[in-house]
Image 1 (cartoon, one colour):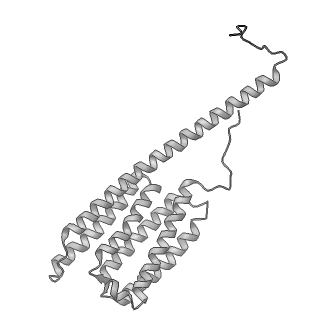
Image 2 (tube, one colour):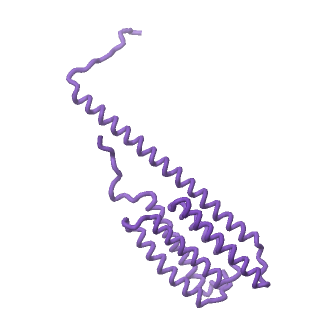
Amino acid sequence: MASPRPHPGAPSPQRRELYFFTLYRMLEAALLALVAFSPAGEWMLEIREPVVLKSIVVLYVVAATALLVASHRSDIPAPRQAAAGLGLDILVVAGTLAATSGGQGGIALLLLFNVGAGALILPQTMGLGFATAAAVVVLGESIYRRTFELMDQRPMAESVMFSVTYLATAVLCELLSRQVTESQALAEKRGEELANQAEINELVIRRMRTGILVVDGDPG
């Protein structure tokens, strides 16, 4: 029996997740551009290397735009695009932390959504790998500043909490993605079974030349 198939033009759930992921990356790039090129940026972060930060932000905006356009291309697998984008996000955060000081919490918080969104699309091993890389970047930056910059007295617990949160978010999002995928597969299977049953019933009715009507003879 022929089973119903999804409309060829309809995007898959993974493709929709990738699209919103790239939209969020554009928002991040816009916020970093505001910090790097606007006078209000000095109120948000202490910029130590303005030229480096501006160069990073320009490259990030260009790359984020390219990834947004690429998210509409069906010939590029969504996990591959998500991996490239998440790797870019981590590198940008590392460069931004190096070019600024005193605002690690806000920058690290931006990366939290990226890690979770990547875990929804990527396989479990890759999602945890990127979450670990993000944790290493945040922890490494904090350890470096506390070791070589004695004036920096930010609590180490902040970096540790962000690192643990990255890993926990990746695990939870991966479990959520797995449950959604299994539920969708079960729903599609049930739909196919119902469609096949309806086709069988219709075929039986069409081939019946006589029928039997069963009635209850008890008037009560």
